[in-house]
Amino acid sequence: MELTPQQYELLCQQSKQCGLSKRVFLVRLIEGKPVKARPSQEIKTLRTEIHHIGNNINQIARSVNAGIARAEDAKRGLYLLDQVYELLYEVAKK
Image (cartoon, rainbow, N blue to C red; front, side):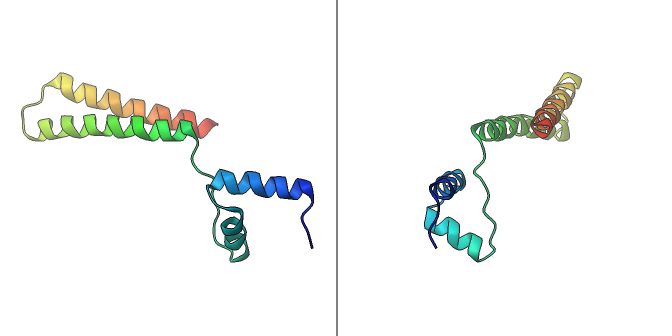
C-alpha cells in the first residue's frame, strides 16, 4: 500500500513538527510510543523568562533566609511570582 500525496504531506509535516525523521516518526507510531510536537518558540521564550524570574526569586529567598533582605525585597519576590503565574495563565488560555 502506498501513501496518497496528501497522506505523505501530512507525514512530512507531522514528523517535522516532532523533530523526527519520517522513518523514526512512523516507527514510534507503530510501536505505540509517544510522538510529541516540539515546543513552539513562544513556549521556549516563556521557559527562559520563567527561568530568569525563578533565579531572581531564589536570590531574594536566600537574602530573606539570611536575614539581610528588606521588606521591599520580599514584595519584589511576590511580584515576580505573580508574573510567573500570569505568564502560565496566558499560555494555558491558548
